[in-house]
Image 1 (cartoon, rainbow, N blue to C red):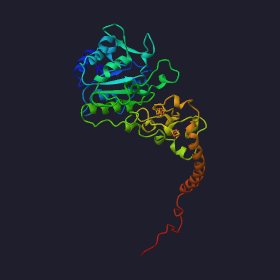
Image 2 (tube, helix red, strand yellow; image 1 turned 30 degrees about the vertical axis):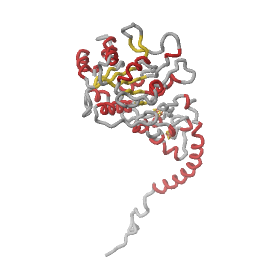
Image 3 (tube, rainbow, N blue to C red; image 1 turned 90 degrees about the vertical axis):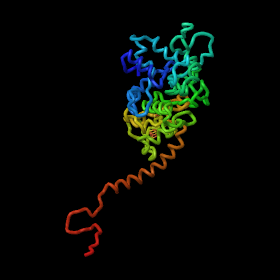
Image 4 (cartoon, protein in one colour; image 1 turned 180 degrees about the horizontal axis):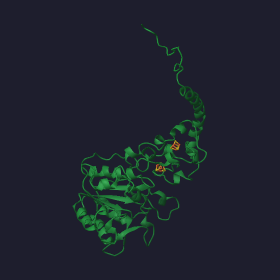
Length: 356
Ligand code: SF4
Ligand code: SF4
């Protein structure tokens, strides 16, 4: 990886790589997904790049966040040249990673919303959407990372001026790469570090012919990562089941009445923890605001109000839970006592029957 080596060695290594990863963060975003990847531990970006995983092809990551080729050593021209190589068909194979939503450049007569590098022919900025037009058909796989790139996210809220959208909205939900792969969407605002690194590893194994077609759900998310709800993996789910709800932050109880959308959100974060297995939104007291969902954020606002769709189920849970809690308290009291035959004295009261 060029980002962890001296620049001249980075160039040699990148030239020899079997698979290139072109990371385009020229969409509308905060770069939070790039930052998130630096926190990955299962596996870490260092393990991926340095070949610590058996069978992984040699790779070169062209990643603006920390790439030497972006800096003063070799200059931004060297960095953007990898994109031009890919465009000329000189980079094969490569995986195109897109971070940030794609603004609709067709809705105005001048200027541009988002760009990345310059077009050598005109000296003018290349629009992010133009890069997608040029590179998507040449990429072995296209990965949309973070909720902006997958579904539009915050920039695509009602009332936005850019007409922003996710990669599937731009390329088409049925789009397939030349290798037959659908767009792979790994949402999250920001993305979960290990969900991203794990998906990249899966795709690299697939490119190397060592893994079957990546299983995706209808929203193009990896099934094994997004197949369960937040609620199903939440540390607080026992409180929900007993109808025991927090009324203020700082409580250890279920957060649904404070605005948690966990029961209807596909996300593995509470199960997985945030960094190195630690943390994970509701586990550590934060309501789930549904950041992995295509309807985010509009369909889940206003945040911090009790979700309207949860009222029936929480009312039912409160009624059922009040009875269950009382019964469980009684049972807990019984089970917290030792059996009565454990005592001093000359009498054995264990129920033993003498047989000799
Ligand atoms: S805090 Fe949220 S995810 Fe956790 S149990 Fe309550 S509603 Fe479910
Ligand atoms: S638990 Fe909710 S808020 Fe947290 S990352 Fe998952 S979807 Fe987003």
